[in-house]
Image (cartoon, rainbow, N blue to C red; front, side):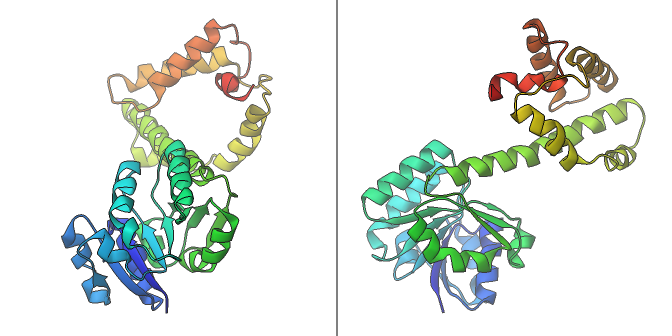
Amino acid sequence: MAHIAFLGTGLLGAALVEAAAARGDQITVWNRTTDKAHALAPLGVRIAESPADAVRDAERVHLVLKDDAVVNDVIDQFRHALSTNATIVDHTTTQPTHTAERAQLLRDDGIKYLHCPVFIGPAAARLGQGTILAAGPQAIFDEVRPALERMAEKVRYFGERPDLAAAYKLIGNCYIIGIAALVSDVFAIAQGSDIAASDALELLGTFNAAGIITGRGRKMAQGDFSPSFELTMARKDVRLMLETAGDRPLALLPSLAARMDDVIADGFGADDFSVIAKALVT
């Protein structure tokens, strides 16, 4: 039976605790808002009064916190109480540069730290589904890998560069959030045309998003902007979209139009519209 601690019991942290309790782990939890920690008491977990109290004798300390500042503050509160062989497994979505700095400082002090952000929602966490990303020393990853594989369907290790899992987490979240923003703008165009959001969404289902990424996206990554849909024509279509949406709130289209205008002004209007990424890949 593993003795572990979870610091941060919001929606995701609480779900991870539920799953760990179901596996039979011995768990101590702490949360800044104490009511959220005490709500887990029926699972048989111990409720700690402080971060330092939470980590005493724990072999793994899982952090599921808000941001870099909170992670640094909480670690400062418990590091003096951390067992010599304990490993900090940080699931917090954080800034890559700050993650690398934190990893180096902890490593210099002899503290084992592995950054492991996740693509897991609360429901998936309870079922041991989703994906865990990991970056940090190979020896530490090898040590905790069996535990990580019990927490998620997939575990992807990106090597010893400590900021890579943080960077890939942001890349993935950019994709997820960007799609939701795009759908919101689609709904604005639909509403401007007196079309139900559900009907517009049905049309989107006819597109293969993965195919677009592996097709045009691969060409973009290679710096190939040979035209199949010229930027000037795509910009015209964006103008029509903006006109149709009218004064409805938009998430992406205005900034996309501005970017297109800049690239056209630089002389790339006859290239494929994907040339808006030219400065980022060449």
